[in-house]
Length: 85
Picture 1: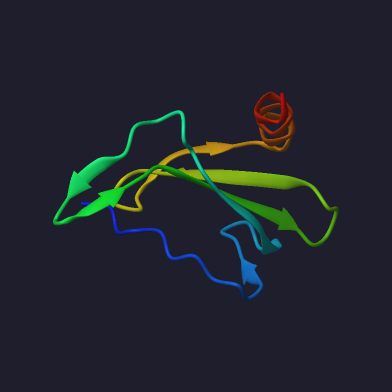
Picture 2: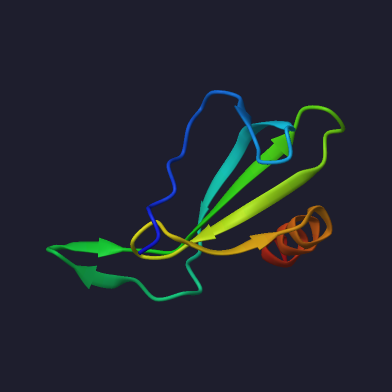
């Protein structure tokens, strides 16, 4: 079973040796909440920024904080512009 993703405000080093920092957290309100263990749970989009070139990536987390998918830099920019309109 996959472990929950841990969100850290501190710089981190990825598997490819690149440093990244937390850039933003957004609740994905277009995905319905679920009642789990006495609490409402949601899907979240956690956006990170690479410190070497300023590009972004994001992780979508499910109701149990497990990674559903990873978004590339261009997907993050498209997603951000989609939710702005």
